[in-house]
Amino acid sequence: MRSTFVFSVALSLLCVINPAMANEQTPASLDESTSVDADPTFTPSRRRNAALNIDFDKNGSAAGNTEVALTLLGQDVLRGSFERLYWTAGQAVAGLAMPTPILVAAGTKPGPTLCLTAAVHGDELNGVETIRRVMFSLESDKLNGVVIGVPIVNMHGFRRTSRYLPDRRDLNRYFPGDPKGSSAGRIAYSFFNEVISHCDRLIDIHTGSFHRTNLTQLRGNLGKESVLQFSRMFHDVTVLDGGGAPGTLRRAAVDAGIPAVTLEAGEPLRLQLKEVKQSVNGIKAVMHHLNMIDQKPQRAPKQNVFYKSTWLRADQSGVFLTEAKLGQTVKKGDILGSVTDPITNRSSVIRSNVAGQIIGLALNQMVMPGFAAYHVGIAANVKEVTADKVADSVVAEALEPVAENMKEVAREAAQKAAKTSNDPATVDAAVRKAIKDNAKNASQLVDEPPKENVPGDHTNNGNSPAPAVSNRPNDELEEHPE
Image 1: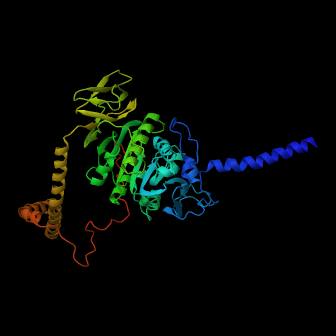
Image 2: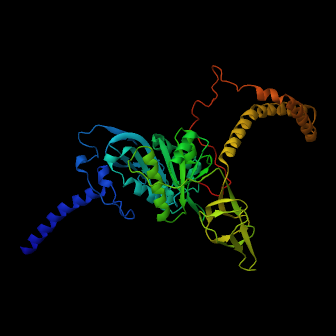
Image 3: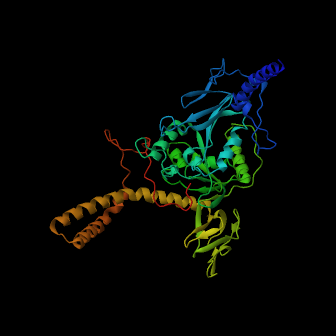
């Protein structure tokens, strides 16, 4: 009898505790997901604002609240809510799908939609923790607009601790994707159209690669005014100008009219709290400038902006050991590190051939001749750089009709010469003569205004969006790919 009573009491306790534990795992509203500012290292505790104590039904919708902040992945996200949605590219065998969690924080007031993405390369971990800290620190009654956080974009690579997709393709070379292309192209197309297309601004978080580390920095196309203004919102985060390689997420977003930057911080396969904290502070500064939060960032020192950079390389193979540190200011001629042959003990030093700041460096390791050891941002006069950009743009535009005309003349001359001679040298001489004669009229082509489209002409004049198909990635790997 006694044992029966004890069993009944225990069973009753389980019935009460289990629902409470289940409810604790999934936040129903944004205020249940806020963090304690005192120690952001630990998973934040959840608290509820009595003013926003909304009853949620089992489908996650707020009872009596019909105000929708955003519709994403087929689900309405209500104002004042925190949703965990799931995206899948439909690539897996039936029953073995690999859904990717999408966190959505919607404020009680309207505002912009800011997107945060990380782990597009599966071995880059700092961005995962950065997004967690940002998302779970938000409070619905103090947030204007929507924040979409995707901590792990490349779930395939993340589970394998790999930078790449299972087919060894780099996902960050296939955006905006191709619905009829390779597996990488289809995944990129699905993610870009189902998630990224809803963004007003995008911050894509990365780290260094291939045993290298990066100073916390932005990569952005500063030739775009919207991107330039966006980059200035990050306060003291160093900025490096660049359009980005074809197929990168941030370049595809900018091409689609979404101001986007890449936030580089630290090295892969590690969680570095200093870099995470810098990244979180930068993102919070952006949110303040966008009037999404009232939390004013601390006054920051002047932002370093580099329009040029260079890689310093090893001239021999051996053990690379660095003496310089990340973020260090260097002068021309400074010794930054050395490479020593472990067999002969022959050693050589790596000197800086420019003045600037070390924004990326290789970790101590064995290297081969030509190995890129230091990435140095070069100080430059902004006015001179701007003038160079304008000159390059004008030259490219002016020479485009000349180049097209030269191609037509060369083809006609080659075909005509080929009809009378089988000698390649004769055909070559005929083509060169035709080009030389035609060059005398090049000034007329430069002076002609750009050709405008006529009715019935369906060529893209730059006003209509380009098709959502990325270019074929370059097979030659960059020294530091995003």
